[in-house]
Image (tube, rainbow, N blue to C red; front, side, top):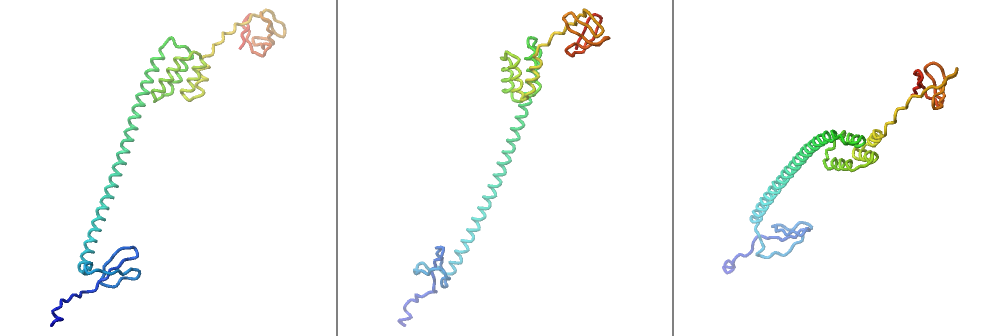
Length: 234
């Protein structure tokens, strides 16, 4: 009877196990191999049912965390796609604006060229250099204005030729400007024939023309035509 009056303090056996990774687990069976069994205090014991419930809560929490992380990743991907779309739209708008600005610059340049071409005070080399600049549309207004300013300050055909080549990027542009700038040689006056013999004629400046008929050859190899008493050579 005395023994029956003593409260029955024993309960199901529990084990406190520390895994190799350091994680602490409670179990109603001995610790698995590799785990370290530690002493369990009476107030540390958790019944199998409570352990099951805790595992279910933990599983639900893990599932919820996984769902939230998935939604976050999906949102980030969507945000990145939107940002990329905005960047493409901005780049396309910038391209459209740049093309529009370039067309406006070229139109202003053409109007400017048409106005300057009517300047009667412009010399041949300056006009030729301007023609080279205007023949090559330049969308960059600042560059065109700078070349135009250089051309206005140039004082010689060689300077204008260099400006034409540098501004157009065409080495032949300068050569064309120099060609236009060369003075036109005065026409050669016909020689006057003073005497002739069987082999040819002499003119008033001492040139000898060999041959007969209307076509003769001057002593320097030039082909000449006899026009009455005059001799015209190419």
